[in-house]
Length: 191
Image 1 (spheres, helix red, strand yellow):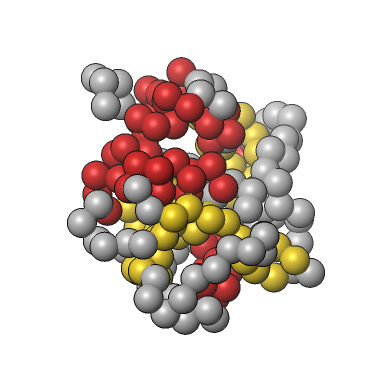
Image 2 (cartoon, helix red, strand yellow):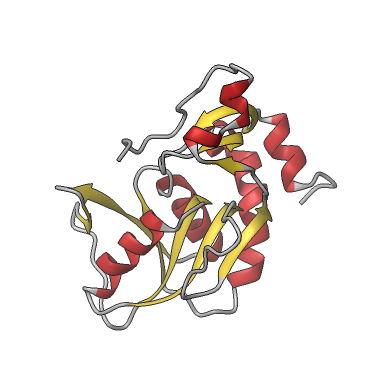
C-alpha cells in the first residue's frame, strides 16, 4: 500500500462517518463505517484488501464467501487477489444460502469475506450455510473489524484495520440528549 493508512483511505472516501447513528442492533453510536463509499473506488478497495490478502495468503483457502449485501464486493476482491473462487450468500426467507449455481464441497477451505464485522451475525449465518455443504471455514476477513469488547468469534479475524466505536443503549444515549439527528445508514432491518 502507498504511505496512506487504511484509516486515512476510509476518511478520504468519506467512509468513516461521525455523528449519531442507529445500528441494526438497535443501539446508537457516534461513528459509522460505510464501506460502500470506499468500494466505489476499485483501486482504493484493492489497496485496503491487499492488507488482508497478505495476512491470509498462506492459509490454503480455496474460496472466499461473502454475505450479501456488504460482503459481495470485498469477497470478490479478496478472492481476485488470492486467485481463488469468490462467491456470496443471500438471505432467503431469513436464512443465508448459496444460490445462482454456486457450490462448495468438503474439499473447500473457505474464508468468509466482509466489509465490516460488528456483531458477527451475518458472518456466522454464512458459516452455517457453508458448513452445511461440508466445506471447512478457516477464518473471517474484513476491511474493518469494529467488534466491541467481548464480541468473540470462533475463528481468527483478519482485518485491514480495527475501529473503536462508542455504542449506547437507545434510552441512555448522550447523543439523543444533545438532540443530534439520528441516522440509520445500514441495510439490515431493525429487530
